[in-house]
Image (cartoon, rainbow, N blue to C red; front, side):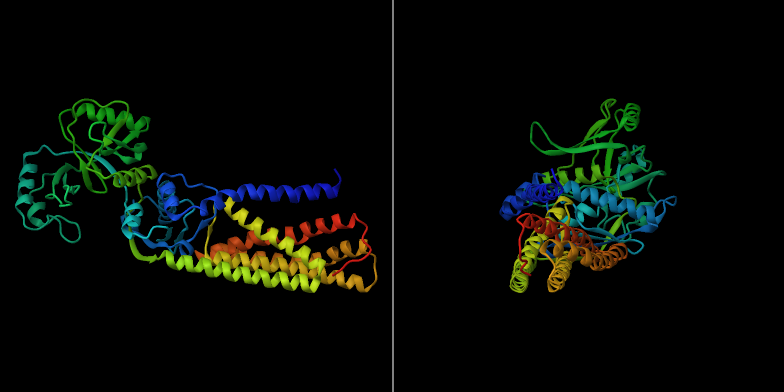
Length: 481
């Protein structure tokens, strides 16, 4: 295989590979919205596809604040922020929304975009929970029963607005115990039952830090969902010893300061496995299992800003963007072919491959496409057109010197290369700085621009040169530029 054959095989191979890699994206977006929603619910969304951002698909934007005052004193804020971002990302990924834009803003704020989720309550339940799972014994102190009787007689909640016990209750609490409310349950008509409270021992001998897995299962008799969990080896040993030492007592399963269930320990529980029952719906059980698997946040997060973007706006942006891109590309084709003839047609072919390779690359990285990202793509395509024009103008200069066709093409590429390299390098450096110091939409713009510049140089120089070299094998006498 000679050099030209290798170059042609490389271009053809990359084109075939791009078709293969881009097919899942094409297939996914050819489905109806309802079909995609069903597949997402079943976690059957392909991983290697081009995702649409919030401004194109619609959804929810959240700005979260990490409550740094509630961090463990030993943990640094910077480390806690990185861990919180990673945990939030894990929760969202397990929910079926891969590559969701999550970015750190300032010292303690986190920006999250959730394309496709327009119900803010659903988003808050998924992200905002601390997911602190604790196992605590229900107090058997006689004074605990008096506390519960007093709480039941009150006409107001036992906690004030700041979440602290009111004086009437706090003075009755036995030493080393805490008052925790139970999960609110609802009847068939949707009416909430009377709020239940538990007096628990304050210390938690076992927490969710030892969890290895959590999944949703259904009761074999009634079909009600519950959460089955398993501990790692160390946690399983602690759980076995703990349950063995407290047979006959009630063990409360506390998630985010709410008692979900408090069953009686009937015997030592070996194997490091158990279940959490709590009159869950299937969706509630699934969300809790997700956040348990992802881990507990280092500190609570509170939502300080939420914004819902309707899907209509996204659809409108896509339609206008596609329309503008089509007319812009058509005008470029007309100009290049009309002004540069055969050379313009070759440049347009390379430009089409540039766009095709760029979309394929973004799909392979499971990138999220936003309006700023589309702007970056357009700029990278413009740089590729600019490179082709530099080459074609150099060819015209060589033609005026009446040089043979076999010399015109390599000479034009050699002379244009330095200008192409310099312009792309300076733009690439700018995009790197934008990515490093920008955030959110700016990063999206910089990412697509960076990838587009690399592909643009490849198509405008390597691909077009390969086409010209193949054409030269026919020993042409004239070059139409």
